[in-house]
Image 1 (cartoon, rainbow, N blue to C red):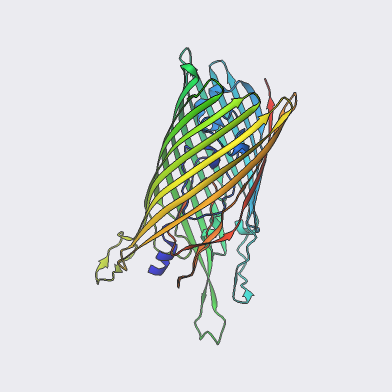
Image 2 (cartoon, helix red, strand yellow):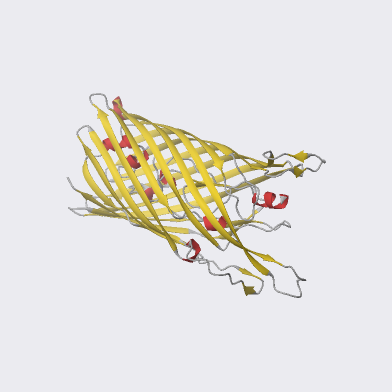
Length: 496
């Protein structure tokens, strides 16, 4: 049992906001493994996504109202967006097809937005085998691993400009009805099927102040609740006869795992002109507190891994320039993060020194210290008829894990670091009645991680984008390469 705890460690899978992770600094994502993250939550239009997602000192008139509702005050007239998005993960690791429709409105002192999205999530083409012959399991019905699942998303926003002040306030609500979160199936690597269902609720209150001298200050408060249930089916093999005599008996085992996370966040941002030649400079500061009241028992774990919490921060600076038809942006962000997860014993356990660990005591404690960094750079040129854009995001993850086993009375330390590269590209064609914008991007340097063989069975894991995934690996990380390729076509139609 203790070996299983050391293998799985303390894993947390939770959802952040319904905003693409590369375009939002308000929700800070955690990763302890270089997973291939699908763009499941890339559901809103963006002008800067093809420029590496630069955002600090460069406005994104399409995406901004979905990030901070007070930014909707910059919307003029009524615009309708359709942004079909497709992504796939190499080596047949799944993908998704997403169809969002968004409406932005801004007139006089009021502004608002609404968005509806339908999504089909396609499962990986995995084959599970043990020994020379594949195992054949009894039929358990349609599951995520057998095909696809449907998710539904809703976003609503309303705001008001305070007359004569240059200030605006706004509020937004995001809801998601989820029948799958990409990658969860790999958290239960030996399961036969997983039935997922749950929801996300995200509420934001934003403030924007347009100061003299073309300076801006904004603040944002947010709360995000993630609620998911995993009904997992296993088939255990029991040898009740000598192994060289008879085939094992197959016994079905069903488990229900709850995944609950609450996030509170505060974000502030300031920008101003740097010179009179189109240069701007900006800075951001963000704080997130994440509470994990219920964490699933991944794989064969039978000891609940209940509370956990994380404090995540970021500090960033950005510069941009708009000169005629050309735009340039650069973001530099540093993210110090501290996270703690633990396992609580549900039975009394004897310790290595002859004592007893009581029910509810921490059997395993994991402390993570992150020192992450993000760089985004991009440029574009748009004329009357169209334009092109290029960008690059590089994300550096560096953390130290300190793990304490209060049953075996042992301690260990592990250091991990890696880089994820995300080149982006895009183009736009302008017509008198509408515009068509294409964005493509590829995330490299990721895959399906596992741990090097240490005498314990390795676990394969994956996760969804815009999700936090905190795993305490049992040994050095290994990686089966898998890259993510995403394509978004956004059509913008001005109504008035």
